[in-house]
Image (cartoon, rainbow, N blue to C red):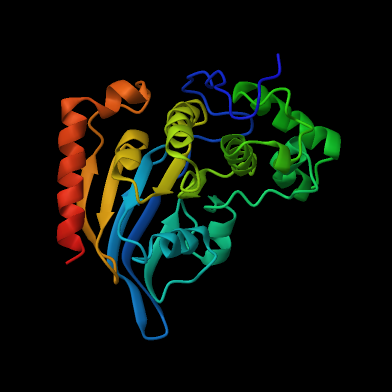
Length: 275
C-alpha cells in the first residue's frame, strides 16, 4: 500500500551483508593534514583513521573545516600538506573513484522521478535506463520507498527526499560514504526518525562512513566513534567511542545513562576546543 509522504515506513532490515554491488568499505587514513585557503588556515596537523566498515563522526563548531575535510577525502580538493589514503588510493584522482559524497542539500534533479534520481550513478557508468532502475528498485523497497518510484522530488517529503539522496549515494557503488550533515534541514521529529532509519541502513549496507554533523547526540547515536574538532584551524581535541551499538532503538539509546554521560563529556570537550 502507498503511504502518504512523511508517514512512518518500515525500517530497512538489519543485515551484516553488503548490499547490491557493494563492498564492506575501505580504510581511511589521514596523517599530518594541513589545509588553508590562501592565508586562512582551516585544518592543522589533523590525524584520523577509520577502519573498513566503521562509521566515524566528525563534530565541531561552524566553520571549523568539517565539510572541507570531506572534500579533501573525496578528492575534490588537494591538501596543502599531509597525506590522505582511502585504501591504497592516495592521490585526489584515485580517491574520487573510492568515495561517494552526499552534501547537506539533497540536490535531486526536479525534472527526474525519484527512481531516476536514485539511479543516476549506474546511468553515468553506462548502464541502460532499465538496468539502472532495476538496481534502484530493490533498494526502494528495502528502504520504504516502494510506491514512490515515479514521484518527482517536489511530491516527496523532506525525509523521503533524503532517503532518495542516500540511495543515490549508495548506488554509486563506492566503499567509502562521506555524509555532510544529511539531516540538518529536517524538523526535529523527522530528523529523529531519519537517524533511526539511517542507523539500520548502515548496518544493512556496510561501508566505511565519515559523517559530519553539528549534533553531538546524532553523532553518538549513528557512529562507532566520534572525533571532536576545535575551532578553526581545526585539530582533533578528543575521541569518544559510542556507548551503545547503533542498531538499538533510538529512544532507548539516547536515554541510556552511559549515552547521556558521553553526550555531556562531548559537549564539555567542544566547549574547551572553542575557546
